[in-house]
Length: 193
Image (cartoon, rainbow, N blue to C red):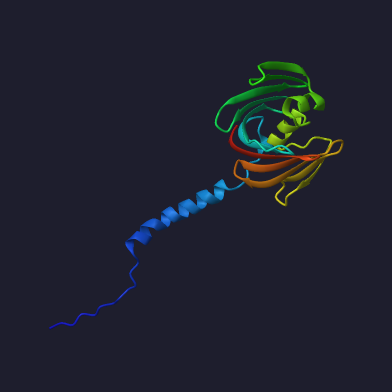
């Protein structure tokens, strides 16, 4: 009778061996996807946003689709969260056109803070919104940056505007815009160049 020598090796479950490449691929994809996007490198873009204007009145969340062609042309289509159309605003250079569905009115004219306050109930220059979308500071803004070179906080020198970037993940951003006593919460996502 012959004796057999059996060498025992630790067994690695086949499932773990087969899942290892999948785990590595998933880790790589997740780490690549969480890097914030550099919006200032784009000439055009489309964003979907959720906005809430917080003031003394109850906040009503709205959905805004922004379409920007550089800093000179911006269109904002505003709907309720449930999809009812509220209005559209088109900004071209120093002029704006606005269609407000509830009031059944059409406005057009030169951009100034008073006309925007009457239209949006917030005295904000819509050209500033284009700069926020592309993250290109206005010459009248004083800005602070993160260690990686992203905007963190911007203040306008002639008004009470202060913008804080609270969070960034891939093409999603969460911003807080303060205009005096008013606070605007803006969540941007679904960027398409």
